[in-house]
Length: 127
Image (tube, rainbow, N blue to C red; front, top):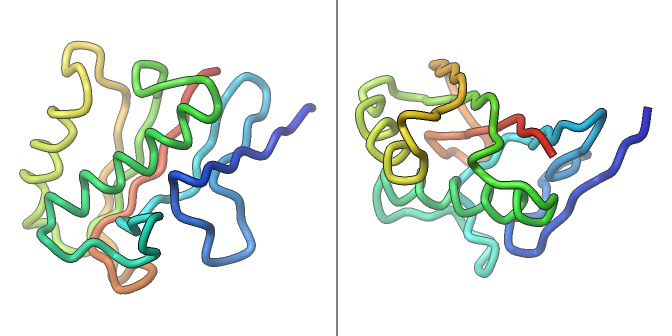
């Protein structure tokens, strides 16, 4: 099995012993992305929707570095600390994705997330 590590400066550096993404067997697997602005290294604090948009910007940079894009995402996994934010997550997803060709998605409520954030998203895409 061939394995390629993907790293992009337009997405935040990992805060642990993992990579931003790995390509294996024709798929890109991203690490969970939180709303860290890579230019400041700080969590976006404006609003919940602003944090979800930052997560999508981070994922977009990683996908682009791997020569793929959101059209090739086959699965998203979303982690929320508050299910009351579900509708806002859907609004942002609809701004970034073509609803007619949307990939599979799981959305899970969790007790806590890295850096005290309230949203984390990972995806799997074809290359």
